[in-house]
Length: 626
Image 1: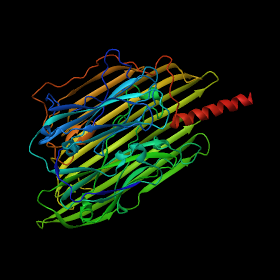
Image 2 (image 1 turned 60 degrees about the horizontal axis):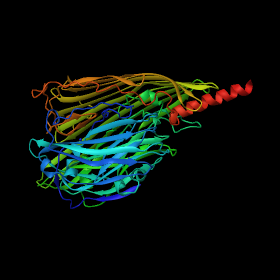
Image 3 (image 1 turned 90 degrees about the horizontal axis):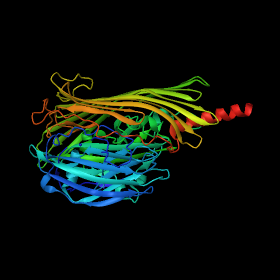
Image 4 (image 1 turned 180 degrees about the horizontal axis):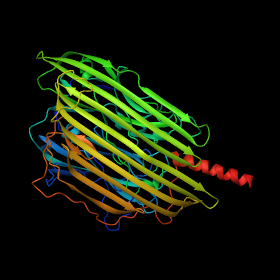
């Protein structure tokens, strides 16, 4: 997939700084809600502040078919978008009946601002609300434009999905930010079916020709990505087999004119329909509803990208199979100068080939499949500006990953961890992001007889992200320790879930037992200032509590849900709001799961479908022998 993006002569716009997810309310008479995520999430200006502007952009659009797109005009609220405002996007989806989980995306003026999914459910339907801080993309909201919304899937719709989209803007604080532009890497939103236009398979990637204005001082590429079909649960794919193959090693790669520019591992997300619907309802998996963008610093490449010629930027998924799809979108976030321009620049890349190993142990049941991956890289750039000063930027990355997939008859067990340490240094200021996403235990077992099918599933996973801010000398070694006195923001998630259920031969639910918890913490400079605890038993929410004493400044970096906004600005280490008492979250009402009673589950897919086929084949073989 390729497109062209020429940015010379762009009008400059003042902007601000970017993610979160969560559950919907539960008004009287509403359908049962089979999902709840971490919401409300910390919004600095929203902590007792009064919105400057609220607007309903899409009011109850009914999605009934794959490919449906809601398109509405956006009218800019310029009076509220001064200084560094905070902009919160809210997406509410409601279904009256059975639904597969749906991939979702929202675009404004062609720029993707949300990627996520809805839960799978049956029976009485669901309600879910996703909230996301989109302040990093504030320049988009300064001008009138078009909002496009799509909820889609490759399977048949059972019931319509009614969706509303709104925004809330809080007036800015602090002085005006640096001049910014926010631009799409491709024109997918203009297509009749935007998600289909973003679909790539195998080694194919998203490519665009780019030429940036010489006033660009910093550049970041935000990549939105989600895997589907045989790439949905890529972390359990077999090396060889009748089902999804290709192995369990994946890597996002960004290339500039074919040269390596950066890499990250995909998030190993367990969607509600991936393994077992009762396992992930009503508490959803980490990052399932709102999947943050993958951030790539392209500043070292600006000497090339601003030379007046067109250059190709490509996003690929290394290791992806032809039997699965990735939906890839890109957003360029540019920091520009009103007075300076780049005269010339250079870039040097040291990126040895990654070390990937996958192997099998055992020829027949039990079979163990193991994966080990590692990559290191350094990208260093120098820019000579119109005032004859020299700016040095450097991006260092180290990625390590491992996984094991064990199979015995109709039981599978998966574990793994994907870690990265990426530091970006710019003119003596360094941001280091260390992250680990672990699947500690993902297991599934199926038992089949002539009357019913019984399935037991378990998922324990965690995510930890630490962003540290310090000052260093230009050309600092990539493995240099973080300086004393560095300020850090830390995000921690922990999910534990297990479910056992029995289905009749017609997929009707006969019996269910489930239990799940999801805990979330935010630490600022080593001190915990936000907690959220969710719990559910047998499909009913039993706990939703927490507190928030974080005291953020919008003109610095701050935690905004499951991501970090104002990324490049060093946060201020302060605690204890004085304007209001800590917030405490409580259950508004008991919420039953829509996977109860005689509900009929949507068809199984992915690893659960493969395991069920093995169990059914074993039953047929036993029957023939009898």
